[in-house]
Each structure stands twice: as C-alpha cells, then as structure tokens.
Image 1: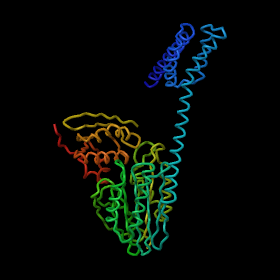
Image 2: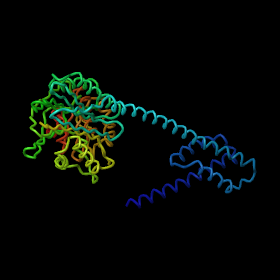
Image 3: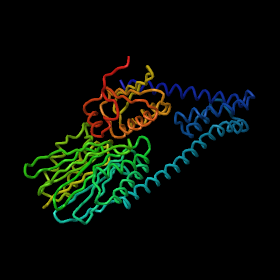
Image 4: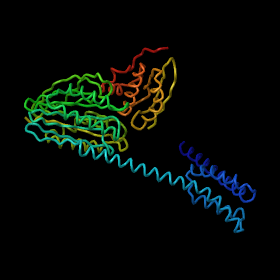
Length: 350
Length: 108
C-alpha cells in the first residue's frame, strides 16, 4: 500500500518537475524573443519559490539552463549572455534561502549555548553532595534524557541526627525548568531541620505557584529522616509513591501521602505520614522516568521488574543498587522515548 | 506517534476528542487547539480521552494550564473516557480533585 502511494507521489513529482522545466523554457522565450523582459523577471521570482520548495539544487537549474541553450539552439553569444540574466535572477533566491539558513544556524547555536548554561548551572549549583553517615547509607542517581534535566534531588544533613531530602520532577523543559529547580533547592535549604515535610511542601507550593508559567508543575517527595530513631516523616506533592523494602519479610510496601502537585493552586495542604525503617530496611523514591519507562517494544515497565532489580542487589551499598538499577533500565529502554531518570535510596544500617 | 484532535462547539462548551498518545511530542498540537479557547474563556471545556492510550507528564501539564486559565474565567474543565492507567496519573498527582473526571452528568 505504502509502496504504491510512494510511486504515485514520485510520478506526481516528476510531472511537476516537467511542468517547471516548461515554465522555465517559457520564461526564457519571453525574455529573449517576445520582448517581455520585465514580466519574465517577475516570473523568475515565483519560479524560484517553487523550485526551492521541492528541494531543487542550484546545479539542477544550471543543467536545465544548459539543456535549454541546446534545445532552443541559442548559438549567438549575445543571446546566450542575455539568457544568463534569467539564470541569475532565479539563483538570487537560492542566495536568500542560504542566508536564512545561516541565520537559523546561528540562532540554534545561541540556543545550544543557553542550554549549556542551564545544564552547567544544574551541574554546579544544584548538585547535592551525598553525605556519609553512621547507620544510614544513601544512594542517589539522576540522569537527564537531554542536556537539561527536569529531575532533581536534594539532601540536607542537619548535623543533629536529622536529614531532609527531596526528590522532584519539574514538568516543563529547558531554562524555566532549571529555574524552578533552583527555587526548590533554595526553599529547602532555607527551611532547615525544624520544618515538617507537610509544612515544607505547603510553603514551597506557594513560592512555585506564584512563579511558574501556566503548563508547568512540580511533583515532589519530601522526607525528614531521624537517623537515631529510624523514623521517616514524609509528604508527597503528587509524586510517584515511594517503596519500602522490608528485610524481615523480603517484601516491598508502597507508601504515599495525599497532596496535589506544586504550582497548581495556592491553598494546597499536604498530608504527612510516618513510617519506621528497621535495620536493613530501605526507602526507595524514584521519578516517573523509572516507573513509566517505555521498553524496546513500546510497552511499559512493570513495577515488579524494578523491585526485582533492587532485590537482586539488596545486600550492596545503595549507591551500587541505584547504579545497577539504572544500568538495567537503560538496557531495556526504548531509544526514542527516553525520560530523565532519578533513583534515591536510603538504607538503615543500624 | 500521532494524535488526532477534533473540536466541536455545543451548549457553551468545547468538546475536544482525541485519539492516540498525548506526550511530549504530541502535546504541542493539543496546546495549539486549546490556546485560543483558554484565552477567550467564554466556554467550558470537555476533553474526551476514550481513544487516548497514554498521557505523560508534559501532556498532564496542558490539563493543569487549561484548568488554571478556565478557573480564572469561572469555567470548568471536564475530562471523560479516562482509562484506569491514565486515572492513576490524575490520582497520584492529586489533580483528580480539581477537575471533573469521568462524571456522567451530560448536559444535553
């Protein structure tokens, strides 16, 4: 079916090219023999628009011109020279198109440079160091699909056995997303340890709501972990549910708290819940780049596959676990449907 | 992946029917259809997702933006034909509480 259509289109194009060749011949005749120089020149402009539209190259036009010199038996030097005015007039349009193309390239380069700025901003300013602590191991990985990531994680060690962390997904791309991310970081940094996740998200939501543009929003999992007690207070702003791995039973539990994504309504409130991590238990938080991953065959990943990947390496350091899961995911991933991937794991090592 | 979008005006409401996948690649097409409707704000909007198999977060962003604009004009956003997979997305993000999703109250 496709092949037949293609052939039909090809025939269409060839007929069209024939028509154009005839049109060019007509213009030449008008210019050289019919004493309609002005009209002929005018016609050159619409003619060049048409040939550029079907991606004709300048050399094809020159070939056509040379063929016509033979076909119309132009032997007189003066006449041939005069016919070149037509060729020149047609080729001028190619010059303009080329200049437009150069200008566009220059614009793209500027755009690329802006993206570089945003991406290095993320690399330097927004990157959170992973603290090394007694009785708690942390693993985190965040890999952008393109130059600039929409995913973000932040870890703040408050030095008084409390640790705040956030995993966020900014919906919206490029520089606005990077700016929204800085807002998340600085709001978290300023809030300090005394703030509960629900209150933290509520305040953050008001900042984000005032600042992001219409289609943008942020999902975020906000946690406050007490390293001595092994207790985790958490809230969620429309983020993917977290997972708890229970070492005593070898089972995974889903944890979620009610709350709307950041940036939609200024009056949002966030539920806060508490869960305790026993020795060797893990908390896993990821972004939808992981849970909604598209496989080679375009189907979605199964959450059980992700659980298996974690389970296979559960006895390792969380940094090795996230690395292992990331590598397994990349192997399964549909090449053209990549999303930013972020995985964050806390392990209570007692 | 393509998306087909059809718009119909009926009883002060625009009914937008789509088929395909609404993701980062196809979202601009829906955006283009919705932009004038969002700015005008004289109509309610109903989006029918019966033939939409997948929505990603960029697609969801359009619903968020549309909701904000329509609320400014006291207009409502209704979403119908939402499959379980897509409903999960509206539930996790908490957006289900702000929009009218799969409500059968047809205004005929």
